[in-house]
Image (cartoon, rainbow, N blue to C red; front, side, top):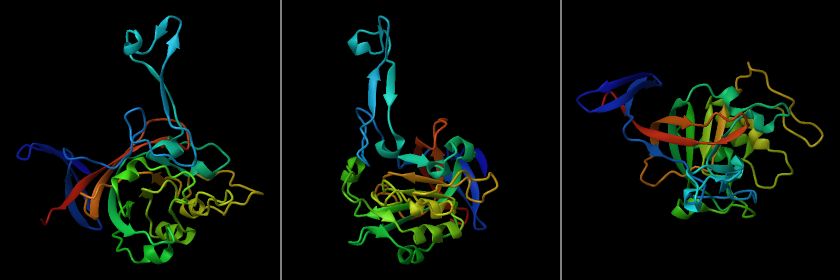
Length: 272
């Protein structure tokens, strides 16, 4: 990838080649596909996880709220990334040994393809669905489910049988070499699956979990070690299906899943 400033366009561009076709993206035109949490946030919910809390810190006579008489705002945040908003998770989500997202995600710019699909009444993405997508060999795949009402931004998915991916669908995407999956579902697995998380295991190429045994760890050399899943995104209808550049923004927190902010940039081929 090459970054350059174009004085004629007054913008910073990123140049990249996807499947041998060179192109560029205008970094002054971000397309945010994340959902937020907090007092003024979107606040979607999954798995009956409590909403995130933002409370002023109290230390001695100091209170971290100007509105309450303090000299500065200083809040304590309590949240669970897996159910409070857009989040990105790594293989440490399903291993006994602790692996943090920062251990696996070392770069943050990727080519990405956005596809839209209408959910059937059965409420899941199957291998047959994935087989019908014209996938272009990008690093990341962004899946927008239809219908795509704005109420999805603050959807309470808990106990409502949210949609998911079948294990063979994720095995298919894995074998195509897609490294990063982004979805507006709260999880790639069903809400209730007896703790098996079969789609997660297929995505990371790990032995299927049983309640009698779980994956201890995963070697650094494993081809899926750096793969991620990002859930609870929201892709506005104004974005067309196609190729984008993805900037996957994450905080440096040493845990398996963190709140994240995936941002897309329209990708233009040099032939245009």
